[in-house]
Amino acid sequence: MARSADETRRKILDAAADEFAQYGIAGARVDRITTTAGVNNALLYRYFGGKLELFDVVYSHHVTEIVEAVDLNPEDLPGYVGRLYDYYEAHPHVVRLAAWHQLERPDHAPPEAVRDAQAKKAEKIARAQKEGRIPADIPAEELRDLMVLLSLGNSPMAPSLGGGVSVPRRATVVAAARAVLEAGPGSTG
Image 1 (cartoon, rainbow, N blue to C red):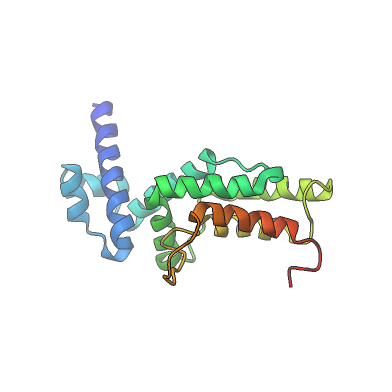
Image 2 (cartoon, rainbow, N blue to C red):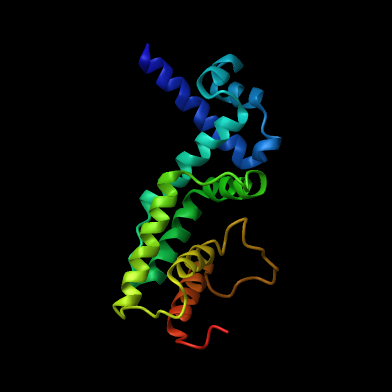
């Protein structure tokens, strides 16, 4: 019986991830999620409480997954940007879920595992800065966040002004990360 319940939860979570990524919280429909999952609405409410709680579980799962999947080496921040970029390309729903979270749940804190992982990444950067292995003109937390923002260069969260891109976007975001690190003190404006 436990296997059946676990399988049902997984089906609901998979269907919900697609639904929330496409429509956000407000636009998502419980009946579409349960129809896609092949279960009745009562099971969704039984296992997750409601649509908002279900979104929180889906979001937590996906953002925790990326934190664990893409490691940060402070001495290779451009490589980190490239690996994040690749992850987002392979898992576009993660970016969409994060965007919906920012739009519809801005006051809801990220999962503890994500907060802890982000703090550890900032600590790694700060340690490398203190040891002189990477520039220290940008605070560690801001440098970490800037690298994440650069990695979103080809995602729905990055505006495109058209006109075409002359080189692959991945190369551009990695080069931008490298340029940030090579700019040196005083040149960040």
